[in-house]
Image 1 (cartoon, rainbow, N blue to C red):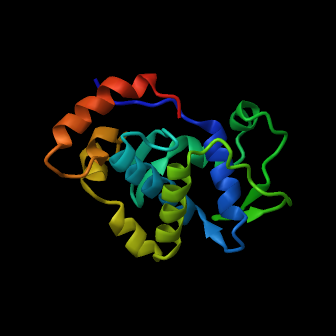
Image 2: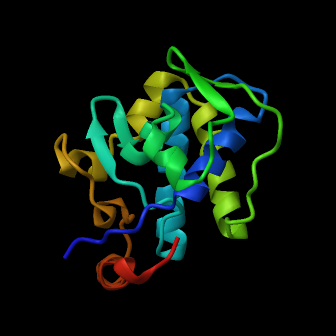
Length: 176
């Protein structure tokens, strides 16, 4: 049984809003990899991801499918978060802030905020090539162009097998 989580639309929406509110240009690659870095590091430290997205192993690294769709402004996700529109828009491959107002990070645990901010700063501090290389690890390789498994995101260590069993047993019952 593979670990799977219920995607947190509210956290994803507010995370995207937070990224576009930082005052720096954010391209899709940077934003998508920031979410991946955050989910993976939080999973390894706290045994659950932040967003619970479905990650696809694409040519240039993991893509959280639901977050990518939300970034593009697909209506289903707007309906899920009960918003008439996004405070950003896609301008080519860049996310552009189009509305004032700050994101509401109230649905995030403090550890999730810390991991997300760290993931964002890691991602934005790399160029495209470095981000791509940093996300082509065992988890990406094991997926072979398909859907990535959370189990494969667990870092090597003496408790790796036990951690994998734990997330497999608990993932379906966790509310992110």
